[in-house]
Length: 124
Image 1 (cartoon, rainbow, N blue to C red):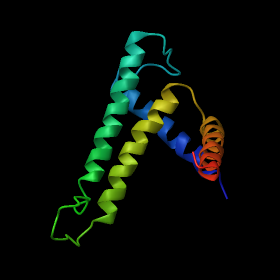
Image 2: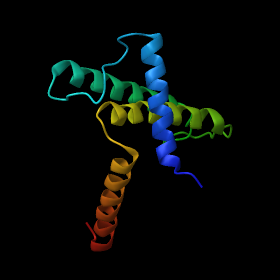
Image 3: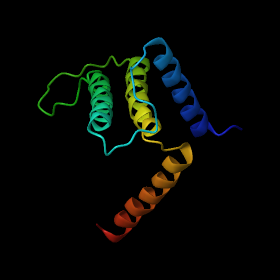
């Protein structure tokens, strides 16, 4: 079985390179230097696009209001997932732009997962 996280990173970077070729100056060369203002602005804009996509996903959730008396039973699972993937792609682009790898993400994920599990066990 292939390393799926690495494949996701490779696919995102392939797309980002293809986008740069078709739309010059659509993103800076990576890895970006985050001490530079323009790179911080670009990364922030990318993050905000990801947040917008998450809001689009949330628009598919119709029954979240506690005071709502009626329930909407239709839910488009495919569209919801598509919006989540769109958001994930923007956040993944930030990792690529800032020079993080699939291994870096996995290491950070494991570290944080251990922390949050310890917090749960200790009543944090």
